[in-house]
Length: 338
Image (cartoon, rainbow, N blue to C red):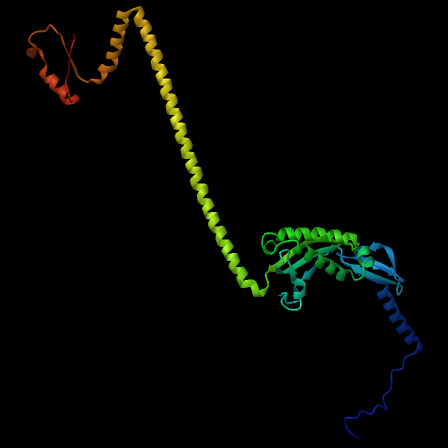
């Protein structure tokens, strides 16, 4: 006999009693019954129970729950989790790599703008399930319908704007407009979806025109830079010139006011002196003379007063003292009463 051939004629099966078979079948049936009766709802989910295909309210909250075995079916809806749909590209798991729209997603991302140019638009829609009943039962293939609605809204909004707005300054406005219109459409279709955010992931011109577009952008940036530099220089020079002109005007006005006030004061003083002189000429003349001497004499330094009737001046002059005064003051002032 071949050694590789096993003779099973002498093998004997274990001898199970009917009681053991019944216990085993009961245990299996019990396990199946337990598994089909109890179910777990995660913290971010709610459960929707279907009995013979009919919805059984209310919604089941997170936790360990029970249902009728073999009769009820539980659908779990993530109402607390933020979901997202990607358009024009796909994020591959688990490597978290992004495959862009140049391949099989190009038919979604390529759009015609309002000025008949082409732009490659890639975007993300982040949403939540706000009504599980509407989400499950009101719209057939709700995810596919939602993607079609989003694409239609985005194409309509992009088609109302120029390519420059789409690629540069109008991105935030496009995001907010798409979010508002898409939310309104979801409400009309009873999808049970709430839009959290619409994000333009990447917006570019098509590859064949990218070099020309980059040159145009560089020229625009250089133009804006030169304009900003000129505006900065203008903001520095013009306000300074205006300030200096205003300062000169104020100084001139102040000088004019000072001269006018001084002239008016001098005229008033002269009139007052003239009136006093008219009333008593001799007294006024003497007072004016004394006041003038009071202002002038302190500035003369050393002084020598000689009587006009004196005789033999030289013997009487204190020459040493006069020489000292001359050396100290630089000059010798002489004055005789007339």
